[in-house]
Image 1 (cartoon, rainbow, N blue to C red):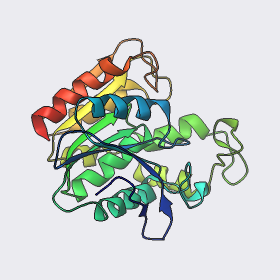
Image 2: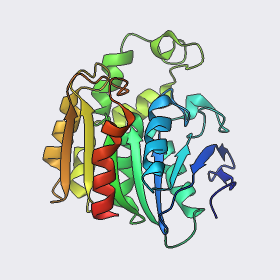
Image 3: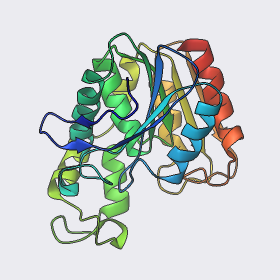
Image 4: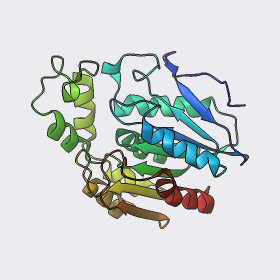
Length: 243
């Protein structure tokens, strides 16, 4: 059973979650947020609610250091969140067919994790971050790690761990080329946080035949301009085909 279940990472830090019950059996869609986000971001709630209405059980999660999860935000990196994701998968019922949907940095977490974990059967990214070094330089290059904040939000200090992790990763094109599962990329062409070229480059780098890139005209980073049904439609079709 997943409803009411609590999760933690290998450090004992709680991983806050919300479960959407649905009719399909033996499958689960895990949805995760980007940097400074959490499981209750409107995009994740909107998409999970719509997918559940179409029969897909969904689990929204907050990575450690974010939202109501345990841990310190300053420790939240792509590498640590990849560990969180694998720790969560360890605590799910055996035999579930799992799809992972990640927004922004959560997409980077999916790209890093999926080639390493065969339990993820389908990968979907929403405005997925791919060029991590470019992102941290573009968005926070003038902020002093350990002193300043992400986008001037005092609840989101910019840590040296975060900067070093994203710069060390550099990009996730090699990981995209190593994917062996169906890969769906969604991006808005008006995204001013993660450029659509990130998804275009990952799509081009991927070798798996079952891949597709859907671009939403006029949509920004959080897809606020796109209704729930329109956003969920390609995801629903992809899950129905491959999960």
